[in-house]
Image 1: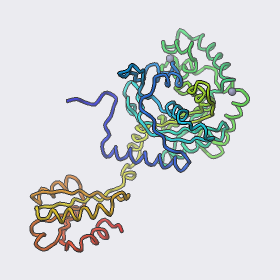
Image 2 (image 1 turned 30 degrees about the vertical axis):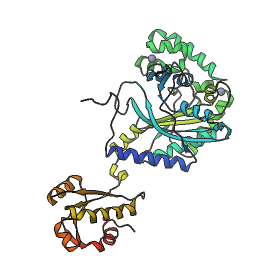
Image 3 (image 1 turned 90 degrees about the vertical axis):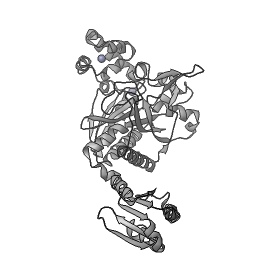
Image 4 (image 1 turned 30 degrees about the horizontal axis):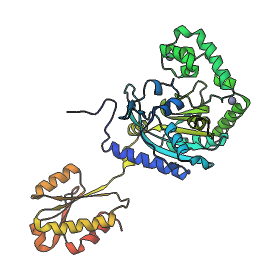
Length: 424
Ligand SMILES: [Zn+2]
Ligand SMILES: [Zn+2]
């Protein structure tokens, strides 16, 4: 049998239902805060990611699914969604708006070693907030993410740092270069390359030696210019004022090159749930110098959030319970009445958010219908056979209590909606 590719996943009920509910919750949450949905293609020109995330980043240099189409265009499955959204903003002339607030939910693709909660095709949700350079936008975004996870009953911590701007970062970069150069022979091969290309990357390395050396490295916070320092202090002060659990981590740099000033990660019991930061130069980079707009954003993983909710909480609380009803015709004569009842029920409930599930079925034997209803964990089996046809009745069997009663077809709809599924 052909199996699914390594690092991918099938989502089946109840997990698929849980994912759907989480996505709905996230979408509603951000729409209330003024964010509008955006969708972009799952593949883009390779250049978009090289130009934005940085050629040195692992995501672009090692993990990207690249391919050529039949005309030789060099494309990549998107490894992240911020650069595509910024590309779409520019291409669709959204920059004319002063403020742009967008959210997305979509697949990303990274060729990395599959591990728990890390898949080669993963689902990310996130927001991009463009137009405001002031720390108040950072506050709005970080505070809302904190509240989002709280709405799932997860008390997360926010790890935060500032990596400076184009004025002050070169000096910090130079200090890092000098520091890591002294330890060059103990760095891993990747980091020896990073040293020349972007020494900030080394702070992100998972290699134990590199981690040890990084512990003594200069901190970005010590090299911030006046404006960056003010921005960072104002942000951390106001977050603390509103009791957001903040951890200042001065080695936090994030895995993508386009960030500046504020970078942050959201952690729950040590596990990364989301991350993001400011990217004031990305619009300029992607538009090749044509436009400028300050921005901040974040992205979170759907798989991790789903798994934590499954581990920590009663997922039935999220899923809710459906009333499951099987509507069964047992003879050809009953078909017309049963389908008539079925269409009337559907006419009444279609498109409404009712927690009811109706299955139309036909069996020759009642025993078979009841056996299937048991397997499906149906709450009721409603059936009509030869006996019922004669009396113009339908039998309602409560599958939990085993009790059954016959009622006249003409009285059925009222009884069904008022007593069984209890909706008007
Ligand atoms: Zn600065
Ligand atoms: Zn390393």
